Image 1 (cartoon, rainbow, N blue to C red):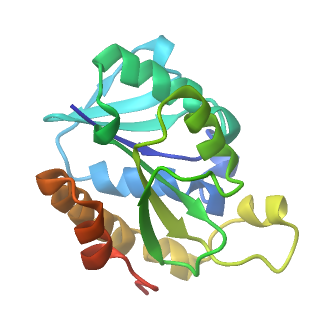
Image 2: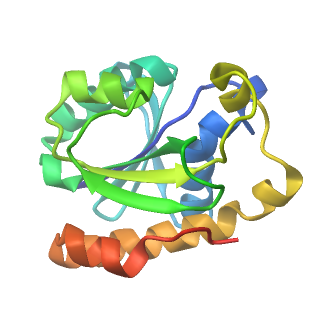
Length: 185
């Protein structure tokens, strides 16, 4: 079983925020798949299954993402190497995509929460949302521009391709070499 988790905050008011780029990417990834919704209140998440993959959007708010992810990981007994988390990174230009396994949270509260609930050896996909010229929390809770929103599909396709490549060999160095981008758009 594979878990692809996009991080964000639940609710319409956050829907197009920079902090929700993980949610937006998962939405785009599953829009043309024949998924079915998994209903389990213990997950505290929107969860969708397609073949052997579960797509997750935690409904615990960003800072408590680990609670939701741990419940799904435990329920389905998902190996850490099969956990993939997609999230925003303010230190990268919009559309930049980077991959890593382990390491620190770099101050991202959603990743801090996940790291406190499961082993750190899962795949992190960092998606650039641009560098703030204002206070960080206001910036990540601001909406993406129309141009940025129109490019979510391009980013999601690139990430879907990178995930397929990764699960075929689990080689992080090859993944980085082939799929790391400076800016997709």
